[in-house]
Length: 318
Image (cartoon, rainbow, N blue to C red; front, side, top):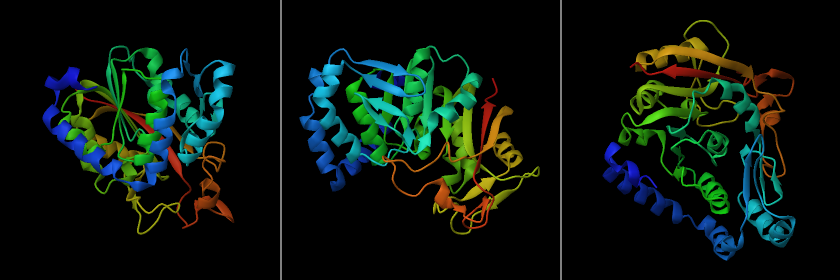
């Protein structure tokens, strides 16, 4: 799908990386049953489907069609759990994901610039929920990057139900952004940077992938405080093993400024609630209520400040 822009980035390296990533991904035996279900699913018979991308991203057909394929759809959806991002409705099958991603979307959508004909990256895109939310503005390209096999297969099912040439998913990570120098008009990076060992280098990679005057929308965990400090997590944070640094908002702004960004604005900061993140039938494992101290929900189970998230917008200079 990226061939039309082959002269604007390192397309040769991209093809090699893509082949390596897909080779590794497709070798995971865990997905053999899912792939068999996908091969037997009659996508060619699903005519007249419509996409509605309000708070629930819905791909729907006639009642007769949905009734006919409900069991097969349910089996595929169940085989892809946990669904971390959503909500979705696929052929009448409701997917209540762990995260109410629509609530986060509502917090930053009004800050987005016009997206018509723009090249947009969603770095750490999960199953593509936010890319589908952006489709209404008719961007030229929505490129989602995420190395997770589960996220890839969830997106793959969505895109088979409703193919759209503007939406593309590649199993790459933030570390691969160097092959897209000054390529994107807008980049989303939501819930990624605290998983990175070197947050400054990550900010620089995000800066380098943007065109001049490009805009970054970055969301991350933060801790309270006015000083530019960061919590260096010694073991786990809210039971997550792969959290390295949780900054204050002012510290995050320093990282972004040192990376080259200007006009760094805090859009919203809020404590995560159990309305937004919770256990559901399609995400039946531990969730926010299990990550907090049962005697003091202002703290994580490890004693750190409870999860709070900020969204900032940062612009690249002209």
